[in-house]
Image 1 (cartoon, rainbow, N blue to C red):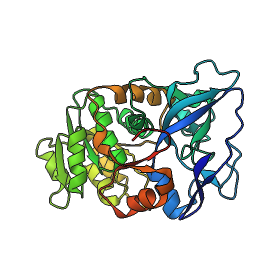
Image 2: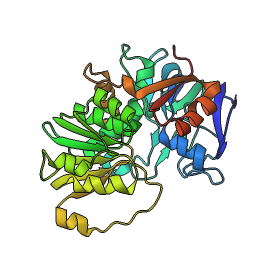
Image 3: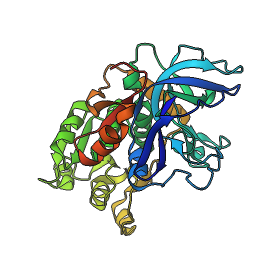
Image 4: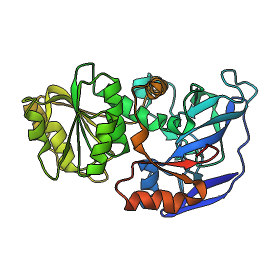
Length: 349
């Protein structure tokens, strides 16, 4: 089969790979669409970060070169002898996360973490072999390109859950990249009545409005904290820092009300100076969010399938696997108007 394989920083090769042997509890998925994640981009630009290039991963026991891709949808091609919940022809998405599986879900997601496409072969390939427990069936009516957004939307839905967002809340999202936009989608699905969105790009802010933001501001032209406090003098109920820089980190805390929650969703590439007294004096609770619980992943299928959920503006480009480097990774590095780029495997354009 053809696959996009990570070898090292700036070294991804589209080449032929053997399909792995199917175990009794495995499912062979014919991949339809796969999304390029910011984590994939970091591995391309700066890696190895999570890639087990020289040392085997603790859970999978595998190491590179590795097939990238952990956001993907497809159709079941074959099932192992002991698989009982799926059959050939089922439309599915894949939860790529492997954990210890021995602790409560809210704790387990932070222990022994491994992922398809980072610690074992993933979905930038014509076929993927996945454990039955990681495969989730989707409605026949859901388009497979849209379904490729289940995984990143699950990240956002978990962050909204960690921020304790409830119907009627006002929230703010700092940074309107793919995860920031999907956080807006998830906050709207959770019942947020007002959603502020901040970014430096007018194009991204327009997408934010299209997917559910009620207030937008380009922070080149205004201060987000003052903008929020014109209507909410004490701040909003929850904020989501999805940009990964100190300015948005500080602003997210400053615009959260006392006892509200500021959730760090972005992966910060650099350390930053922070005095915890800021939290003590403001009464703001700080949280962070990584990945998702299995129940959140499954519930995200429902969110995505809701007629009120609009994710179309987030998909900005569809490409062929052969073009994954130039039209995918290099485009994401050079064109800041891009959001989610999808790779076509067996899906229809």
